[in-house]
Length: 71
Image 1 (cartoon, rainbow, N blue to C red):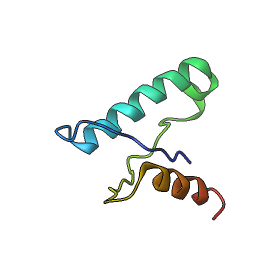
Image 2 (cartoon, rainbow, N blue to C red; image 1 turned 90 degrees about the vertical axis):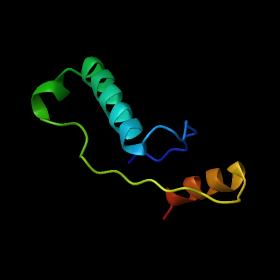
Image 3 (cartoon, rainbow, N blue to C red; image 1 turned 180 degrees about the horizontal axis):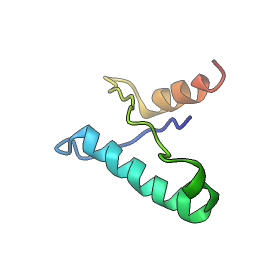
């Protein structure tokens, strides 16, 4: 599972950002690992999850993300 923290231009629709991220990473993985081309019809699922944070520090968010690995 990929968990990450992104800063992006809020004028860009989140679904467009996720679509580009998945498309680009899929091309990179398939170039680096050719067996993926024949074994998997699609590298990523169509779904995604995102959320926003309010008035908390970046450090707090990073700690929360790191702690999710242990849950």
